Amino acid sequence: MTNVLGYIFIVIGLAFDLLGCLGLVRMPDMHTRLQAATKSLTLGTCSILFSMVIFHGIFSVMGLKSILCIIFIGLTAPTAAHALSRGAHLYGVKLWEKTVVDHYLEDRTAKK
Image (tube, rainbow, N blue to C red; front, side, top):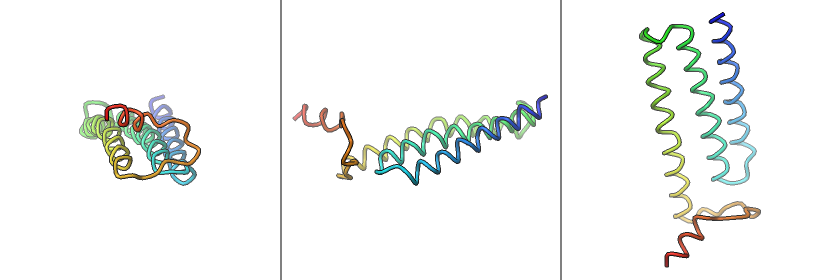
């Protein structure tokens, strides 16, 4: 039963990774590409790592390394994506022409 559950998490992880790659190619601007890639690839990679925990057990060397990698990816990927997106916005990378709202620009102009 644990093998089946592990394979299910691998398939889920691969599906999210594939969707993240498609989002990276299909989205119109840098900000939406970054959002699509970060969310789906983080979840996909963490699913694959969690399947390793299921296969090898939580207290094995492989399981502990997988848990540490899940924590590291869960903390660093959203933070890095936010920093990249904010830096690109401050640098002047244009949003997609059909973008409806830009809260960061509204906040920045309201403070001046």
